[in-house]
Length: 359
Image (tube, rainbow, N blue to C red; front, side, top):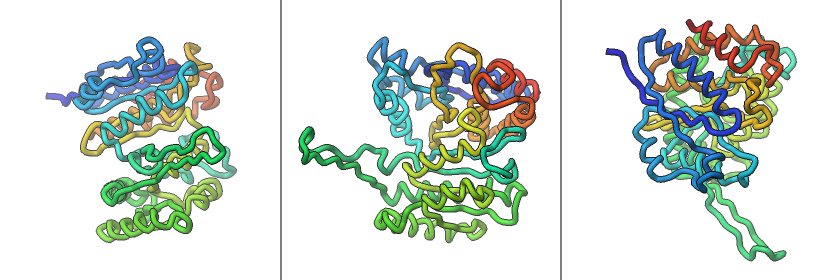
């Protein structure tokens, strides 16, 4: 009997439904080729729903989503909705409610994709950033005092528990052991780099560095490194080939992964996952809703397709996930650009090319 996976599909707003449609096309092709089934259930969440009903994410929907094997997200955001409402009401709530404490961001330059870094190609840009996804500044701990006066004080607190740090770092070491460069036959050692700011955030990184060494002692096959976040930004541009697997806290991870995305060809290619390794994970393209391209069949779907590949790998269908990545690698050299309306193909045609390469 073939395996079956229950997938919650959240197409979202703007161009989200367009790229998710192509992602589902490729996922269905992978399921047919590798002999498993995908039971997809679509949910109407996002800006249009909020404008229509005033609702972001109900408790009942959260409860339903706990029963799925994974969530496949397009993009959420709307120009007519005040910034922060949808981000906090849907995206952050899903991450926190489902305890998706790992944000996984592969940084992979595909063949034929233009890179803004001179003399850098697929061999130099092939690493992964693991971002702690449940703590730090993004938990919203803080407040305002004497609001509206010239003595107003704003406080936003960065907080981490030992348990949060330990489970993130353990996941990172396990990932480096399984998917590092040596494990992939591309180097002689697996490396894990902790990125922080220990010379300024002394209390926070006293904890992170100590736990990094404690957990790392259990992984003698993974080389430990440390870089300040500002230096990391420099290295990502000057010598990205030095990185293998990178782990960092929530805010720093949010910043450096966008920098990494442009080095791999932009947001049209970058995919990511919000993971609960023991529960329900959510996979998505990194780019936003791109409302100016909605309905024009011109947006790049490769990030959404790549997110689908990540989802299959996380579900245990690693051969299918790798095959989708290989199909993307076959497709990118045929495209004129990764930019919307400059690809040389429509959104639908790019999805067709990947599905055909996969088949």
